[in-house]
Each structure stands twice: as structure tokens, then as C-alpha cells.
Length: 330
Image (tube, rainbow, N blue to C red; front, side):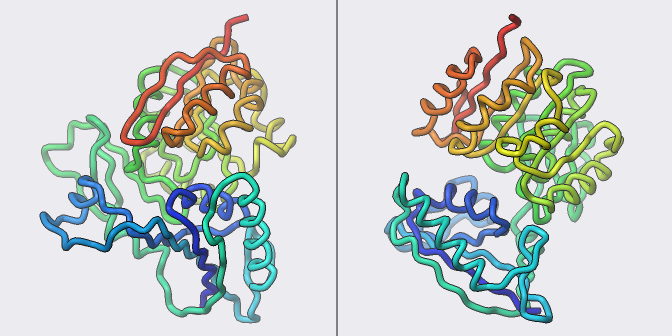
């Protein structure tokens, strides 16, 4: 099996925005190479006590994206056939567009070919069971320990869709969903990924969840994870598309019918999303946002206020921020 590798040279501060941008055009499964030191939690998850000293962080990052090459030499991106040069040109254009409003460093991109990469499954060796407060999050290839059998257990296999629950942004969302959830509540989950937020919300007592995601892989991941956790398929509807720009998606999602809207996405997406999502909320509905790096907190909070929502809480974990707001009753 052959794969085309698109490798971007950038800076560490631009990793998230570039991954998000290229994800939107169909490049997934980013491989990140940088010299940022591991956190204490990351070291713990590698099951070693002492790691050798790594090189000093120079701020440079390499992001690699892999696309399978078909037998005729074409590539399939977002369900459409194309060729490597066309994708390469699109990546270059996206990087140039980003350069207009943020520093992406060199921003160069190279194209290589490689074979027999099992990048979809290799991550499994690094994903092990962990806890979000009293909730056990566990992949299918591990067993629940006897001492954990009385806990709330979330079985999650993200596959090619983003979301294991390990990241601070997801944990911030989970806590807020649990706090504001009411029996039978209707939830809209924007940027659903593997479905972790919607599935947990249904376990917390939500009556129905609707998810939207740009990635078609999310549909399969959500179906598999819902089944594994015993979620009735009729309670979780999954839609593919961009709710910000696609009127059809907004119409299918519905207006004024959600008790809670959750969006665990980068601040660059939350700012244009917020004035759109207000129409989906019921009066008094709760808007839970995360994925916000700390220096973008003010931008998101201002977007929330400008949309007519009242900020209820701002919570932090590490360098990440959650903003929770409410739509006025009248």
C-alpha cells in the first residue's frame, strides 16, 4: 500500500491552526514532530520514570499528513478523486492564506511517497485507560479492572476521528456538560469527532444528541462508539457538513430547540461559529465552548458577548480555557 506524505515545516505555535485548516480540506491524522518537552502526564502515560534529555526546543515543527494512493495513482480526499499535485497546490494556498493573519514560520510543504504505513492503528500502543474525575475512559483492547466496575465507564475507540477524552479541552467540556445537564435535555455537539461528548451527555441524562462534523470518518466512529456504550441509535443523530457556512446543515440541525450546545473547537472556529449557533439554542440554553488556548480567551469571550449571550463561567486546565455562556430567556 502506498501513501502520499504532505510535510509542512512551520512553528510550534502554529501547529493547531494548521492542523485544523488542513483537516477542513480533507487531510487527517497529522503526525507532529517538534522539540516541545513532554509534560509530566505524557511521561506517565509512556510508563517510564526517567526519560533521556531531549534537544532544546527551537520552536520548529514538522506536520505530516498521509493520503492513500489508489491503484491508478489518484488520491481520494473528502470523497472526491484528485491528484497529489492538486492537493499540494491547495495546501500551499491554505498556508499562504493563513500567513495573512498569523505567523506560520517558513510554511513550506514537501511531497513524498512512502509505503505500508499503518498510521490508523499505530496510535493504539499509546492510548490506555485513564480517568476524567470519577469516569473511566477505556479503549476496547483493554479490560475494566475489578476495582473500577462500579464507576461510570466510557468505552471509546477514536479510530480516524479526533477525540479520546485525554486532552484538557475535552475534560473541561465533560465537566461542564455534567454540571449543566438536565434530564431529557437536547444537545447539539459541533465538531463531534469520535462522539465522546455526546455519548457522555446521553449517559449523564440527555434525551437526544445531534452531532455535526466536517470529517466523514466521524460518522463511522460515532456509530461504533455509540454501539459499544449501549446508546440507542435513535437518540444520537450524526450530520456531516459545516454548520457555519452551509445553510442546509443549519436547517437540518434545527432552530431554537437545544438546551445545550457544546463546541470543543479552536478559537479561530469558535469566533465565527458563535453568532450562528445562537439561533440553535433555546431561550435560557447553555453554550459550552472549549479548545481555546489561553491567549485567545478574550477573543472568544468577546464573540460570546457580541452574540448576546451571558458568560456564566470561565474555567482553565493547563493552558486551555473553557467559556460557558447562556442565552437570555427573552
